[in-house]
Length: 226
Length: 242
Image (tube, rainbow over all chains, first blue to last red; front, side):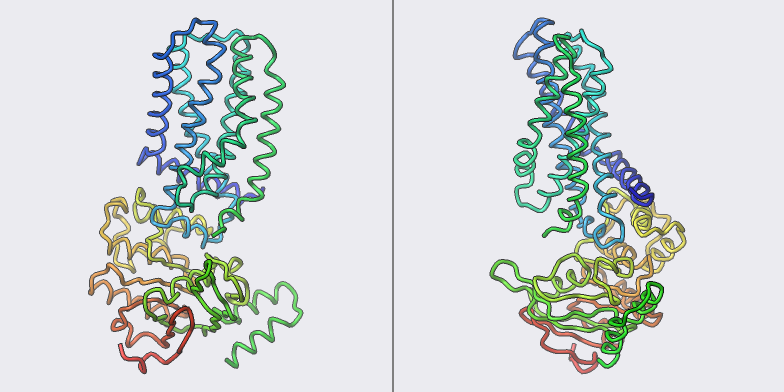
């Protein structure tokens, strides 16, 4: 990746962070949704600590998957407002920098949400990790990147469709299933220490690599599609 | 016409890279050859061929839905023609983006940023580091560069002027403006028209869509008339009644 792409990626990330800091559109919607999931499920059933470890992985990633969908839709909607995306398209700036800028921006938003939500999960579900916590951190990083990279790509693809709020989950969820299954398994494995989470972590690493490359290569076509 | 043929002949000659740059600056700002844009069963633009000479001010006219904005988007590289080709300074639109300034119906700026913050962001996309051209652009359109108010709180006229500043802050030799006078009060519209006349004098080629011809009667060089997606006439500005 050239230096100018990296520099412009940083410019795009800085712009997205500034816009979010001023509007808080993305973060507020994500936070509201994630808190709702945690609280409703914690009231719906009262699991023991052992049961919590088994189901927490599923709950955790479902909350973040749907919160990420909200964030992804909002982050592209802001580019459509006032037609700003056209201003980007008529500039000589490479499409890749916009893509990586959006991915990194969304990654920061979802990661910030996770930092807030993990303690809530621990409190509401009385969670303790029986396995190594550093593996949990790797699963969080890889899982979040996997969701964000394909989500950003598909959100860009659905941006000009009439039902883009509906279109994004329709495109994203089927393709993210292999990643989500492995995120859930890896999280449960680390929390329960029943078996190793390393195979799932390896799968997630390969998934991230493959989809980052594919999305990177195809993004310009998607951006300029009519 | 003779000039465009000469430019084409020069472009066809096998040349080395450093010469190509010189040639592309000699090529016409816009060469549109037989372009059509078809959406489903509707042809928004039909077989339009057009050449724009440097340092001239063109006004694109036509009734609503005639295909003016579609044609402008194709020239700006925002839309691919279904048939035909577009060359900007001898290159395809995507390769000549740095040399185009484009203003659309929508303001193309972020509501959450101030005017100068918007321009600073877009300047970085063009590789412009200095803030001087940004301050100048804002001042020329009559906006205060020190204004910290966010664009979301601007009036429609202020947004329109900021949008114009965003289109020309990088001093492009080709300026494409889609209804720059809409939502602008008569005094500001006159000011913008004067600004455009100055730009044309300093070497910029301008293609502008407007229904307010009175503002441009003494400024524009040529009127192009588009009807049902076809370019039906070209005439020197004074010959077409406003």
